[in-house]
Image 1 (tube, rainbow, N blue to C red):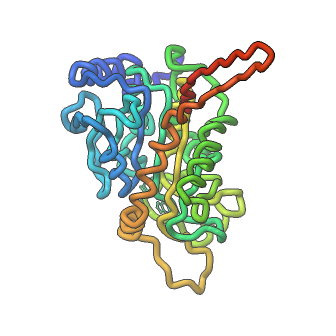
Image 2: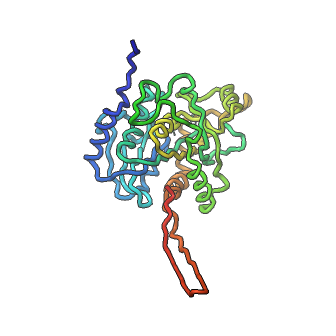
Image 3: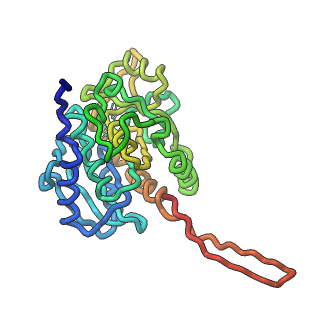
Length: 312
Ligand SMILES: O=P(O)(O)O[C@H]1O[C@H](CO)[C@@H](O)[C@H]1O
């Protein structure tokens, strides 16, 4: 007999109930979802014509329990695209099963979302990183997943995706390239990096030995989120782009007096708020209209076409 595996926390039927409820409470039909990290919820202020729905009112939604996570969905438009923004995400250490943490991603899929942008606050493991740097995530190392706590564990529902989804292209290459282009235009090149994010379960911050191990394993920044959401989003075919704000430097040295703390994480978020709020919108903004001009002198023929190239 097959084991009974609890899948109800993010089953197709549960997600459909939530998605139908949301559709009945807003006319916005999002193609873009944004997940805001600790202290980074200010991004929601850049959304036009906001419709706010509190997590406590949404069927099947978990509640935010962490300071710096407001606990509401903001629907509206960003750079002309219909979007939904999670002002507050869920973490393993809050006590939710990993399937529940990632339920909103599947709900967004059922609402029509194609692209997910995620932000987080993270500790800098790469000695070249400074507090306030912004890291475009190239890839992740999912430590809870390696220990069996993967959001796709359990029976697979083919309506979402395949049993064994590929993760070698988890963080969309084009959107990463776009971030560097836009970063250069905005004058962010000095603090814009690209690297590998390692996900831990938390909530305790890492020991010095753990930080050393994580860095030697190839990670540039460490946090307690994002990877689970990206796995679920990729499983159901959404494009992902993610940014880590380096909110503190991980302690790698036994002579250091530094101590990681959540207050510093939130403080760095405030200091880099303006840039963190600008970048996602600019990455998804439709490219400026390009004027193609073709002159064929022999026939004195001029053909001019206007085209708008969409970045997502
Ligand atoms: O990843 P986000 O949600 O930004 O939060 C980060 O900040 C908290 C620690 O200060 C942890 O929850 C860590 O994951």
